[in-house]
Amino acid sequence: MHRGRPCGLTAHPARATPWATSRISRTPRTQRTPRSPRTAGGSGRSSPTASPVRRGTCVPGADHLAAAGHSVRLPLLPGHGTRWEDLETTSWQQWYQGVETAFTELRDRCAAVFVCGFSMGGALALHLAATHPDGVAGVVLVNPSLGTYGLGPRLLGRAPVIARIKRTSHGIGGDVKKPGARTSSYDLVPVRAAYQLTRLWRTVRGELPRVVAPTLLFRSRVDHVVDGRSARLVRTGMRDAEFREEILGNSFHVALHDHDAERILTGSADWIRAHGPDGLRG
Image 1 (cartoon, rainbow, N blue to C red):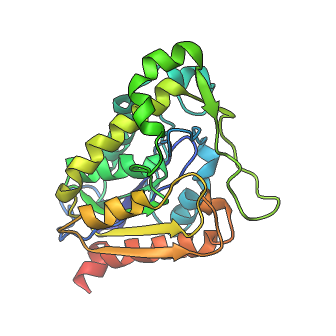
Image 2 (tube, one colour):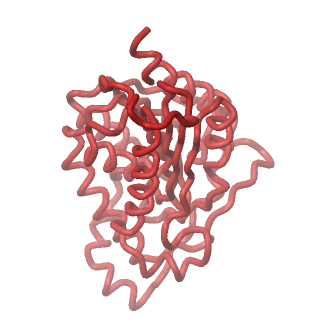
């Protein structure tokens, strides 16, 4: 990459796209071999009733960053992009490992690494930022999922019992306001996978104070998958990070395929540019 150019990592759920950015002061890794900037991505989920999103959900964001000169990683996480039965047997730690692996590769090759996440992918992005406070230069979240005001998660504590009666719930792939927009995801979500999501929620909520990277959060004003609790948790939990929230007034949950997509793409690229090595020096 060009010396001093930031790299990026994008994390997306099986059916959601969270993005966040937080500010940290970081010195470019001048001792590394210069290469093009990198962006990586992983999969995630959104709510106890959300379905896994396939890689196509986050491709617009990855393509936009690549066109801006960043190297991009968009990993397909375990259990995603195949069959819902494969998701049923995976844990949130396995989903996160896909993001961690991409991050490690970029960290060893790039001056700065940014992580972007959609829906459940937003929770994975924040977990990465909390785990590697000195390694993540910024976070971008799109409708991240960290909790809900609904009663469903309380029932998921009995997921092993419920799964014997009802293995799946409906997916959330159609939550797009734009007529004719096409998204891809599982039609069904395993109850056991939804339970894993609630365990990820609890972990990330407890470590938000450790996130110090500059964070940019895009939130749809109307979202039929992730309610307002998630954004509030991020807003109040990140105590030491630069934080900015932007409200999307013309999109539903799958915002990267909706009317506000261009605003998200342009805003994310601008945020990364401003908080990368060149932007910090300027």
